Length: 276
Image (cartoon, rainbow, N blue to C red; front, side):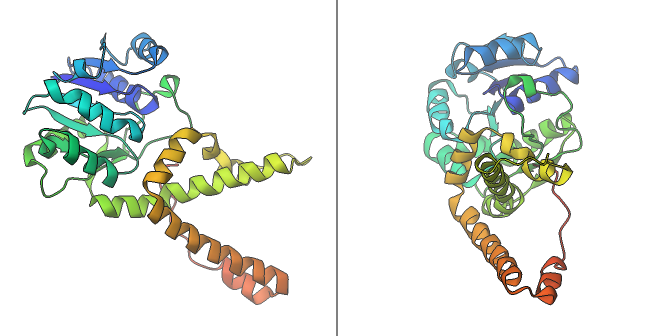
């Protein structure tokens, strides 16, 4: 089994480390546009060999694309000349519908592409954030379409289980809508709170609630700008609902309405998702 990983940030390098940790004897080749990421992945043992280009990864049995999402159309096009019909491709992006459209538009065998998203990210990024156990017990969403080859789906499901994650099949649009609430909205709030604090420094040190609420504001802002632009409508809809709830709270505070405040805080809450 030959695995190629394109994009060796925290997630891509963690895939490589996880494969190596399981001692399966698979060959793992990696490529990244950043030389430091390539060398770092080789030094920590996430990959066995460096690929000189995206195209050089096309000969693998399974290709995992872990680049920023806007790089994916170029990655697909670079793979095309050497891609084999039997090769399976998957990705790890937090937004799925645009990626699936790009696969359909650019790949010669789009049925062999299976959209994927491991719900195991952290606020840390880059190859030094990689961990061999990152996916242990984590849900790993797969988003097949009506055109997806069943064999390709089975192979990606087996690969995910090999990394000790739990594959979960979800409709792509449903994934994007729900994850806009579960991750995109918390990131928007965290970045907003962090910006407020920069603009209004405090003498009182922050406590645990602040650290929990702002932890993901340490995430890569360039990546999150891409993700939110690609999933803008579901994110906008959830933001509107949040703004309405916060406005209700502001109105109750302005009026000094203790009953309204009690009602606002008594709304049932959902369990926290694993992903930041």
